[in-house]
Amino acid sequence: MSANHKTVVVTDSSRALSNQISGSSSVLLLAPLREAPDDSACIDLLTHEPPAEANVLSVTLSGSPTERLSIWQREAGSELPTRTAIVDARLAMTNGPLPTSEVGPISVRGVPENANLYDIGFVITSQLGAWKNADETTRMCLHSVTALLAAYDPERVIGLITSLNDLCEQLGVIAHHHLDPDEHDEETVAMLRPLYDAVVEHTPDDGWIPTECERTATTPTFRSTVPPPGGAAKTDPDRPETVPMRYSFETVLELLSSPRRRTLLYHLKDRLGEEIPLDRLVEDVHDIDRSLPIRDAPPREDIRIELVQIHLPKLQETGIVRYDADSETVHYTGNRGLESLLRYVETIELGG
Image (cartoon, rainbow, N blue to C red; front, side, top):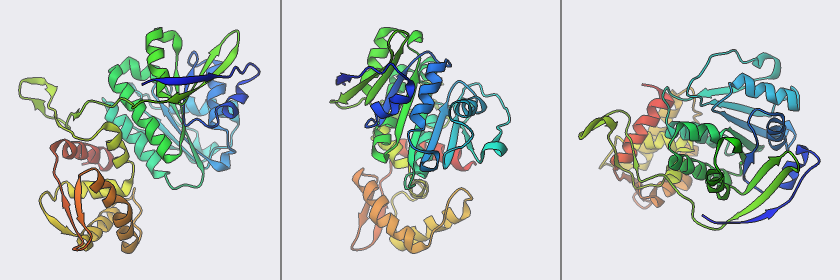
């Protein structure tokens, strides 16, 4: 990937940052982690809109949810956005009370024990998908890319970042990711810069230096296989088995971003080879969502319209289903890689 850059130096205050890069959907924040400039710039980017006009998703891989909340309170006060969610993606989680009673309701979501990047990506994507039709602007903080690179394969981290940035652009989400430049060599930082619409770097002498980037090439993706939940390779019992996945990682994240589409996919994966009448499919999806406390269950006719106008065309476009509008039937095209991932995600979301 290559990028063109336009540099604007901001030396007065981090408060100018959100205005200087207001047209950017994805921002890389380069500063030593857990220091005052990093914290103040983070909150500045999250509070471009008044709290009543914003939803905020905070993804933490280092500090606890309580620590991330305390930074908000110190920098922005006690008023929270309309919706606030914290994804606790730390590998070594520590339990601690979150003082929600004083500041309002906060949703805190964890990831499975020994989580991989698919787990983290799924939790983030499902939360962003839940806010997809909200009237407020959604802003996201990922703290931090440094922690991701310390725990996971760099190529897979690049794939996750690229997929999330593309998804945020599609959903109208404004996201920033933290990176401590002191923890990485220049080559690593240079590799990450073109993945973002803008890079904001703090220097002791010049303050904050925003650099807007024009992405001009296709973005990298994860490799075309995915490990199924459990199971071992026949040639190496210590290595997870892999099966073909013919969809890019960003496509998978987009497919899973809608709760209704996840319900549909969970159901279809067990109906391989069947010609399913649309009415039957609507009834099944309605019954499943109605039985789940985490789902809303609108009237059947609303679900039917949603399936016909949004989800079935999307699944047909990616080759997952064939939908015959004349006969109103749906045929699921099986793929072991997708079904393996769906079983895994279904277990994460619904238990079992």
